Length: 342
Image (cartoon, rainbow, N blue to C red; front, side):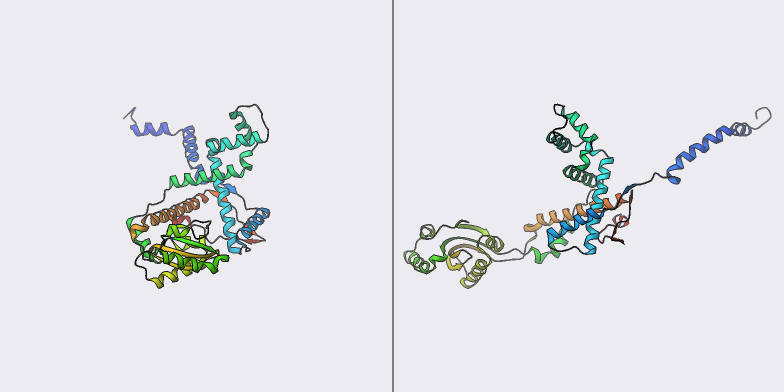
């Protein structure tokens, strides 16, 4: 009791002040301002018709086909995501911190002969004030790359587990099957020497010449005379597919158990007699043979998923205005739903 009144009455009297109510209400409204009056999102505008036409021309040049509506929607969505990543990188001021961009802008200033005699730091700031970093495709690609790296650093990809590797190995057995490999030295005869090639080879067999001595009786071959553990695809690049088919047929007929001569085998260049020293038939891959390849592939896929999910989440912070093409709204078919990434 104070002066005959309870203490809580005294505190109530102190709190019953209009100015105090005003301050408390102002503090509450200040805290609630982002909820009821949020800052407007930065706009990522639609692509212009001219830019869409350029993308379509690039597609046509690289594929030889006109893009479908779905393909157009997808590469436009990709371009707009890149615009968003560029915008975010600029907001984070990556262009002020990266040495690659720093050197690139200084090089541009020197090339344009602007600010001659000025120190590099001044040239860099002048380039920024002129907006050169916004017009240089190399700088923009670098900023997008830095932003992708930042997104992956913030949301790293999950590393593949032993179960993931085993599942990928089981799924990709047919794809991972190991091709046959061949090791041989060969004698080469041009098409003009075809008539005498058989006689020369008969001499080699009669005299039991070793392959190095026998090679002196043939012609030079640009790709070389000795090939070690070559797959059919590798041989096709040097001799052509016809040679590979002839080699496979000759090996099947020989039932090779030791090094031996095979031929003649025709290629796009002429005739070849082969001293085959090794043949390893095709076989199912063992996990130890392909494990590293599987890990690399799984890591790449996981990183790509993580990046696409991070980009999808980032879109929520921007006003991605609706893109249209000739009056029709475009909806990409390969976009990521941010909720599906959680």
